[in-house]
Length: 258
Image (cartoon, rainbow, N blue to C red; front, side, top):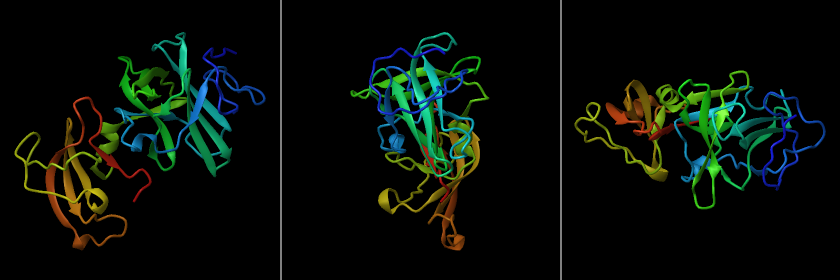
């Protein structure tokens, strides 16, 4: 079995499963990896990078299929390229508790993002031309510089989603720091429509259609979801910009439902 030769320091002694290799026997960690467990909200702090999508374990989370699994991250989009990091899933109690960690030759602030109900992945920065490799943002150095690497998008072990598709199929809201702006049409006249933001926010945007980085939505305030009385909501239709020029989101969705 191939080993990762990276600078030493380990926080966890799990039993990882290397891509294309059987599980390591006993409590034997990957050599020279600084493992840092994710808090589960790394990219919600405003210091993360949601990227253009998410890469995640195809087996899901909390199903008791494995005790641990590892996705390796390489320097280049090639099978023989040097391993520069890893994304680790550890199930502590089958179907009840699990966690995610990132590993690299240096300590990183993890860029782990929840995209489903208690299921997380690593944000995707870009795709290789053939679509068989994805460049991920594993974490950040102390100075805030991103730490990138390439992950093989082997569908038997890895899946990925693009935010342009995810957001078009979910009720959304503006990300913190993004002023709510509404338009009559894509890049057109701004509408005199506003919603409450911050701690008092109580609105939701229902996607109706998308055109490139623009989305036509039905605005409901108060939000007409989760058992709320829809008759009490003020509604209107408008266009919003939901993606930046680089494909990163300007809006987000409730990953755990309401």
